[in-house]
Image 1 (cartoon, rainbow, N blue to C red):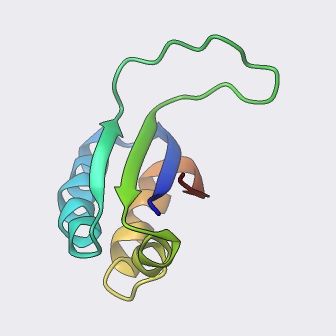
Image 2 (tube, one colour):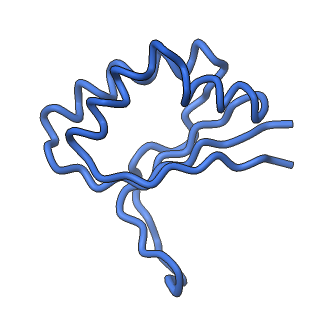
Length: 96
């Protein structure tokens, strides 16, 4: 069953964040990740609990692959680039 890494990102340093994007994608793909949305247009219909900024959705084959990616040693230094240049909320959601 698929799983999704969903990230809401408020980029604080766009130039450095481009480096993050270039480095993160091949690592996600190594774990079977497929980018389904990456900062496209958002139509917020309801926002009682949350007002998203920039949404990224990456589909993985299952929860374990998604977790393996997020917690992998090779992603750790890339994640540090994201943390240094953006404020984020990241969740892993089990698919159907």
